[in-house]
Image (cartoon, rainbow, N blue to C red; front, side):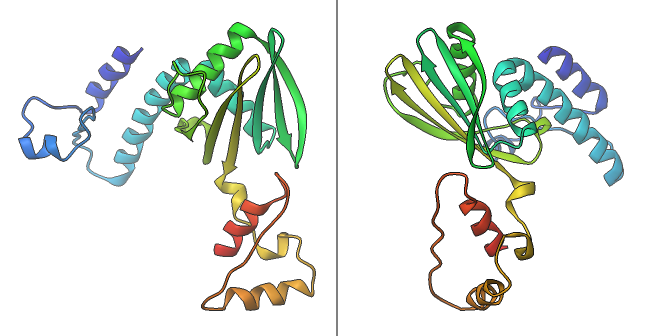
Length: 219
């Protein structure tokens, strides 16, 4: 599949290393590709970019199939967190939706191990180290939309517990009128935001909207 993607890249106007200057090589990521095209306008360039991105997404989706599908279902359910916890010979998967943990499914050990390994690889964590806590940021394919994700992996009795925090950029920033402030609170908040110095503390349990509140206030 990767070979077919590269052939398609050649068809739409590619790819060269052979005649690159030393400065060009030094200025790029060691494993990157340079794409050269005869496209003459922004519309053609956008089409080429979408075509290339589609092939990359296809490769990523197949490489991390189980993990990407789990993430896709969580995003579709508007979940803010995914929890994978080992129980006996299975792993329970739960989504946090509207601040409450809800059972999603149970995975057998083999499927769960493969899914967790894929999540670790997407975050560039050490797959061969199951006995140390690890955390990182997942690199998500563009097919999952404007969403960021953080992962925490902790060794527990029976295996590894995994928590993935999903941050949808579309849902992070909301107008103050939709933030739940009362009519009396809103002008107070507006006045605080105009202060040139100070500190605002936002406290609450997991899933209560702390991150959404902070991003919206900053925006």
